[in-house]
Image (cartoon, rainbow, N blue to C red):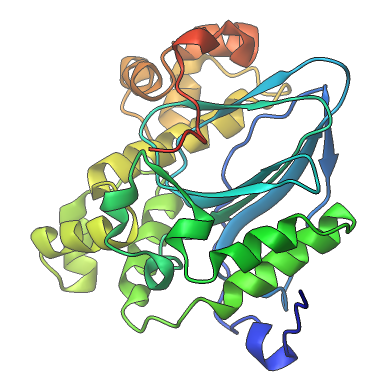
Length: 293
């Protein structure tokens, strides 16, 4: 099977790329691959991040997946037997388990980017996972590309090109792009009414837009952005600020507000996570991220 794609088909849009890059947890037992998404990349303005890891050593590893407001495509398995899944936005922590030698490639999409490839509103995909072969037209070709014998960065680029071909421009996506960028810029500390004033749309209409493009309400998306911002600070070993200061800097009202958010999304307190890292979690009680619904 050949994969010929013209330059015209996969050139990235000249639209500005969002600054948002989701927090992800690394593992010492994984080999990480550098996947650059620079200007000219086929998914330059469509993805928040692309990353790849390979399980090293002799034992299985478990990677936590933190809520980040992104619909994702994940390709995983032994390199010549990869599976492909499309994963909706999650509203609580999940896990990915890899066996020795297995590769994982994840593409995390901007909320404005996936409407053209979804069968229904993004809310129909929230907390759900589907096989790309069944969900996307000619999805088998995309998964076959993941199985090709290529260096991982080249494989990720090939996947990006094939996915870009299936994406259509959506003229109405500017609204969700504006709203999600504003929420990110304000660390999640912005009211839906203010977004309505700035855009000229009602709160009810904005809720429907988020249902179509994101999969969660504007309020929950704001909470996820606060969580993401605080995790970036919490993971910084040079940051010794008290948790109350970290909470305020991250868009929370106080430390208690931040802890409620952590217990809802991560099932632990911010203090415990800061002290012990993600090893503090009971992974037996966390659902798999790539489980087919």
